[in-house]
Length: 229
Image 1 (cartoon, rainbow, N blue to C red):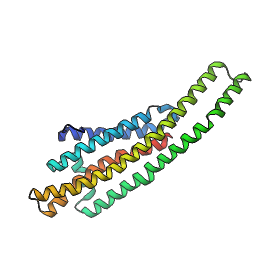
Image 2: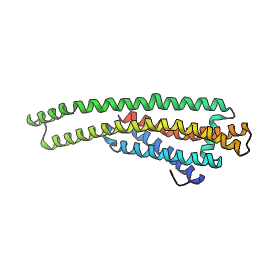
Image 3: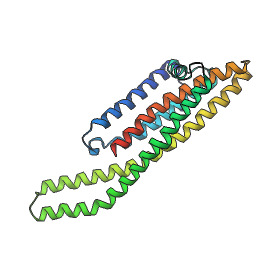
Image 4: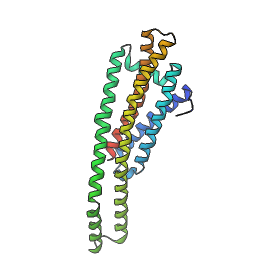
């Protein structure tokens, strides 16, 4: 998707899949008993972020080359704008800022603090396990299981700290993609013979729809990351 052009029908399917998978992850994060139940989450976070960036590139290519990027993006853009371009842009900007500054940045800070405290407390927890084992409060099998849980917990929080930095970078890249699509799209539209109002309407709807269909999964993933840590 980063290099090969994607047809609009396939892009629609991939966008719906991305949104559905993000919602599924959020539901799993809400109902999982503890953080260790989703050890693969940092890897999933990295994969979904790369997948979302690839979709951004594919949709931007279609917006700039064909002034059309499928029904999903068009539906999201038309629903948010509803004939008022400025209102749609303002609402989309608010959603993006909330996702980046409040949720993504907050989740990143939470994961950073959690990783720090988990690693700082690791020697004390290991000593407590050894003490309980020497006092015959637990058997060797229980001690081994607790040590494995400690190791998995430290690996999880350490990986989450790095993965959340990647999510923040994805949000920043999204701003540049939106700016490029609006400015570049309007320029190409005017050069192709569109009127100024038609170019503004067409490329704003497409860009806002593209941004919204990317920001909603990013928002869900960021909330899920906050729940996991």
